[in-house]
Amino acid sequence: MSITKKKVALITGITGQDGSYLAEFLLEKGYIVHGIKRRASLFNTSRVDHIYQDPHVDHPDFVLHYGDLSDSTNLIRIVQQTQPDEIYNLGAQSHVAVSFESPEYTADIDGLGTLRLLEAIRILGLEKKTRFYQASTSELYGLVQEIPQKETTPFYPRSPYAVAKMYAYWITVNYREAYGMYACNGILFNHESPRRGETFVTRKVTRGLANISQGLDECLYMGNIDSLRDWGHAKDYVRMQWLMLQQDKPEDFVIATGVQVSVREFILRSARRLGIELKFEGQGVEEVGIVASVKGSQAPGVKRGDVIVRIDPRYYRPAEVDTLLGDPTKAKQKLGWVPEISLDALIDEMVASDSDEAKRHALLKQHGFKVTVSQE
Ligand code: NDP
Ligand code: GDR
Image (tube, rainbow, N blue to C red; front, side, top):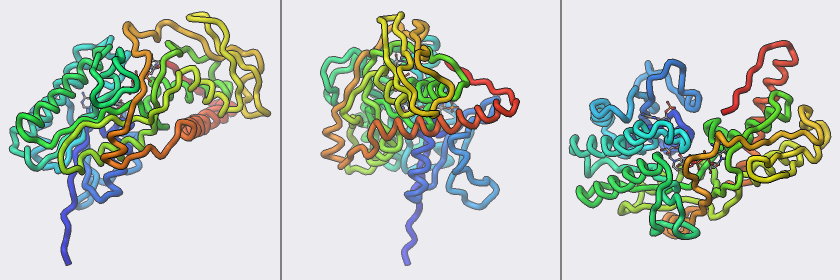
């Protein structure tokens, strides 16, 4: 009987949305999964707690290491200890608006962090063993030069985040060409899930509207709702990250659905899923979302005529990416990939999950417990 050695993967950003789905996916494929988590003053592993394994058992398949993309010595040590077949570099300061507030930190983690990992592979002589995936982004297209955007579309980054990711993109290409490493970029368009961070627009909307529908909050304050995005499901996208590392030769791929909707449309569909028919009136900062009707008792917290969406220019960005629409033809042809989860199914899942949480909170409130819901 032949015993096949388990493959070893190292994931940075394992505590994030994608990291958690990718870890699940790789464990199901029989990998040993190592992940890097940051030291925080509160527990920050809620997205992976369900796959956590007691570190006291012999040879666990899921192991977390403390670390940070700002710390080369720590990265070298973890790569040396784990000797990974595949590294997925998902760790990043990933919020575009925050990158305008913390541009240097974002450049350090999202740009130089990638270089540090590539150098770790090289310093340890693992260029021929370790395959490297870089989490590149549709934000690279920024001020778009072509619609839809594909692998050959020129970049025009519009934020410190995107500029840092552009460095990471090219240093990955450079190490592939200079040192023959299997290193590639997944240029992923926006992808969401119930595990999406609460301050990204889709989750802010599904969570905010769910809270409002249960009477836990009154109004959702939004930025640029004209913005157009190509939204997919994170589960579909992590499958692609893995597929990109299983090819004969490393290449860069755009991953997108090829379907685009506005933030306003995302709000309308999410509200409808909660039994709320919304209408938008007014323009610019005066635009509001008003409840046109409510289905049965699905949303006890709102009534016809309530204004539940307003614009707050605080959420406008110094430079905006107005429109993104990806062309995933190359991924479909070469990797045989098609997204399996539609936007409406994604919205259903996110709203259902946030609605459950809001109902739980509403019940606690009814029974006299203090409940606070924050919005950012
Ligand atoms: P998240 O923001 O959910 O997760 C980011 C992860 O990076 C978290 O685990 C976070 O840790 C970790 N991290 C942050 N700073 C550091 C640091 N200094 N050192 C080590 N780890 C750090 O992002 P997503 O899961 O949504 O995205 C994954 C990657 O894909 C990111 O690189 C993102 O930029 C990129 N991307 C995402 C897209 C999307 O639509 N989701 C689209 C295209 C690219 P902690 O939990 O402690 O905060
Ligand atoms: P994005 O995602 O910037 O595309 O980056 P985000 O969900 O933050 O914004 C999408 C669009 O919605 C507009 N918007 C708002 N955004 C937020 N966060 N909050 C608001 O209140 C709001 N109102 C309107 C934004 O202006 C923007 O146009 C995400 C991240 O996951 C990146 O890491 C990743 O690289 C890209 O997607 C692809």
